[in-house]
Image (cartoon, rainbow, N blue to C red; front, side):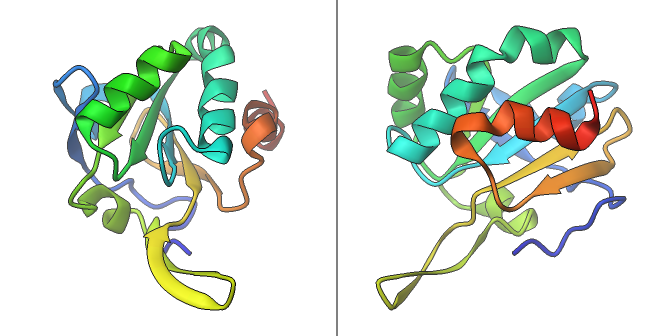
Length: 154
């Protein structure tokens, strides 16, 4: 569970996207941002979530939003994932888990009674002033766009 709250300033981050370019929060200053953290490329839930946001990407752009996905996968994994599904937005390779930790999206999980550390699927909506306006910790992977639009009333 993230330690951040609605109204908090979004933590600055820098990371390398699937094109090998370094990007950070400040690169999107003046734009609204959907920053989503997901566990792993090419897994069913992560693919559904990424494809749902991608299918609506032009609509997000028209509403003034940019979309960025972050996972601990490598740049090469992101290249394959983006190519396979035609993803049009940035995917950041956070192999050191620095961005995940800054946003509280890395923590203890449990499966079949075993506890382990992993990505806590979380989405942050950040406004033009880098302030968090919405946080989703229970993400509807197949219908994430509608989930976000409903919460933002757009």
